[in-house]
Amino acid sequence: MDDDLDKFIEERKAKLAKDKAELKHDPPYMEMKGKTSEQLSENSKMLISMAKENIPPNSQQTKGSLGIDYGLSLPLGEDYERKKHKLKEELRQDYRRYLTQ
Image (cartoon, rainbow, N blue to C red; front, side, top):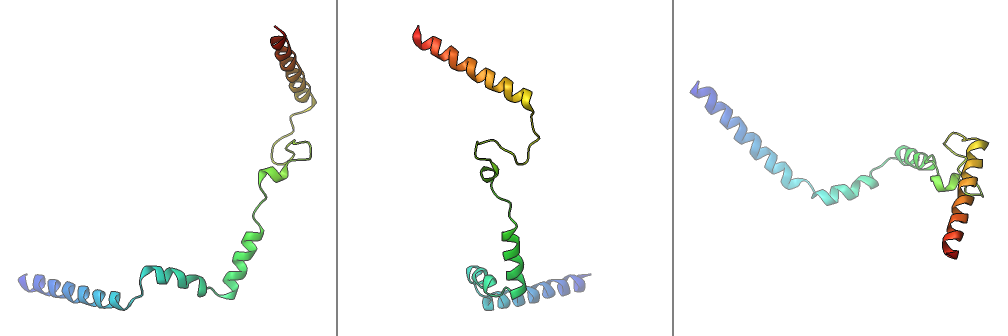
């Protein structure tokens, strides 16, 4: 059993020494990070550019000229628009009454 333990310790020491030697020859992390973009193949660059082209526009760009969002939401109907307009008018009138008091 002692032989197995000694053998295991020696293997670990040898592996540690080997790993240290490999790390001394490897470039620092920031150099490796900078080289990754240089190493991209033409196919990878093409795929990245295609992915960038397929990014959906911002929600601000989907709004119509009146500021109404016609994009991703369900239409609310004319009844909703009438009530909304009526409430806005009531709010304006209440505000005018408040200012006159």
